[in-house]
Length: 385
Image 1 (cartoon, rainbow, N blue to C red):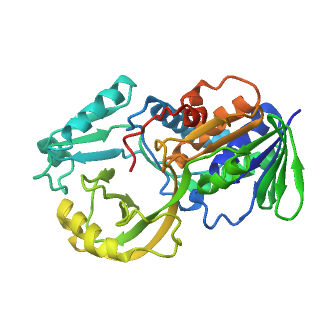
Image 2 (cartoon, rainbow, N blue to C red):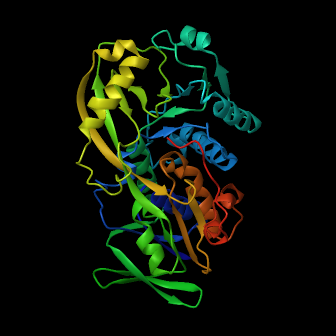
Image 3 (spheres, one colour):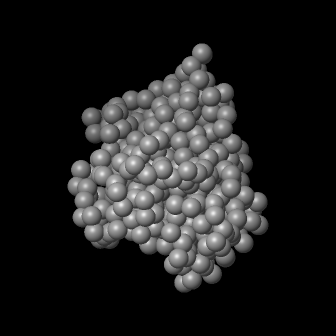
C-alpha cells in the first residue's frame, strides 16, 4: 500500500483521490485550505463539456469524461446513494463570419479526423434549425450533434469527494506552504500550522493557486487566475433546441431551465486574480446585451437577474492542462492549468493521474506532461472560450 498526499481538494484533486483509493488501494490524504470551496473554480464553473477542440488530446479527454458522466450514478455510488448530475447534451454551436470561416473549417477537419460528431452548417441551415437566430452576417456554424452539453459541476465534485472518502481517503483542512525533499524525492508536505504530512508521492492540484507550490519545488508552473463573469438573465423568449452558442464576438450564451446564462471575454486583460465580487456590470451593459440582442432579436427584452464570477486556471504557456510528473522529481506530480476546461476533463485526468502515480501507463495524458515547459514545446489549444 502506498501513501499519496494531494494538495488541493477541488474537482481535479477529488477525482484523483477517488481513483487512487478506489482503483489502486492507495492511502490518500487531500489537503485543502478552504473546505467551503467558496472561491474554488469547481464551485463556480459553468460545467459544460465539448469535443470541439483543436488538439486531439483534449478531444480524447472530454470523450472519456463524457462516457464517465453518462454512467456517473454507477461509478460514484456510495451504498444506496447514486449521484445525479443533470447531464444534458444540446451541443455547442460555434458561429463564424466570413473572416472566421477558414478557421472553423480547419477545426472541423481535425475534429472529424478524431471521430467527433460535428457538422458544418451554412446560414440557411442555421436559420432553419434555429429560427430565433439572426444569421445575416454569418458565413458558417459548427454544431456538435452529440456528446456536448452541460451538467451540475458542484454535484460531480461532491460525488467524487464522497466516493473518495468511502474508499478511505481523508480530507484535511490545512494550507500547504512547502515541501521536504531528499534528492529527486519529495518526502513530506509542510503546512502553515507547522504540521508535516509524509507520503510516497505528492500531487499539486491547487488550480489557479498551483504556481507558488510548484515554485517551492523549483518548478515554474505558468498558471494564474483569470476572472470570468457569468450573467444570469430572465427573458420571456423561448429558444427551442438552444445549444451553447459561441458568437463570433467571443460572447456566449446557453439556456438554464427558463433562464439564460451568458458571458464573454473580459474588457481588460488585467482581470487576473481580481476579487470575485468585482462583477463588471459595464461588460453586460455596453457589450454583452447589445450583442445578444443582435444575435437573438427576441433577447432584446431581457432582465439581468444576478451574476457571479469564477477563475480560469489559465496556463499562459499554451492554454492546455499540465498533467503528469514534475520535471526533476520521481514522486511529485501535478494536474493544473486547464484554462477553462478542467471541470469537463477532471474524470479522465483524475483516472489517468491515478494510473501514473500507481506506476502504470497513462497514455491519455502523455501529451500534457509538464516536461514540455522545460523543453519549450507548447501544445497550443486554439479553441479556448
